Amino acid sequence: MIKSRLYNIIKSPVFTEKTVALNKVYNVVSVAVVRDANKYEIKEAFEQIFSVKVKSVNTLNCQGKVKRTGQRLGRRQDWKKAYVTLMPGQTVDFGNNQAQ
Image (cartoon, rainbow, N blue to C red; front, top):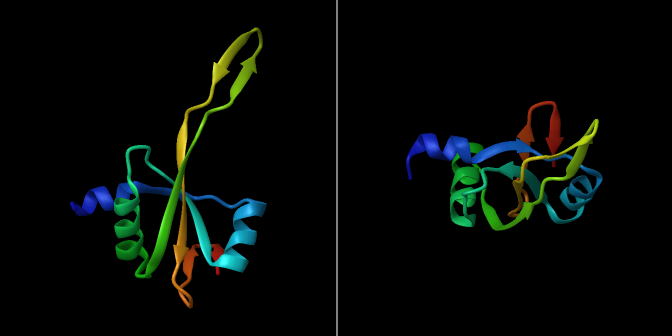
């Protein structure tokens, strides 16, 4: 796969109460990814960028919420989230917020 594509697949980490709990118990990291990425691409990108072994990848498409701005209705953009399960003993550091 083209290296530039690998670095564009992972957009940002997703830190919520649920993902922090999943990380502590099951060693799962949650990230926002581009919408056209598949599980194999996400796994390869994670392994090459962060130098970790990935056990599995689960993805889900998140629908954008409908929001009101004055009298008009707008809609947020749809996005894709990936739950990446790491092998035991593997960790990923996202800068200041550390996923362990």
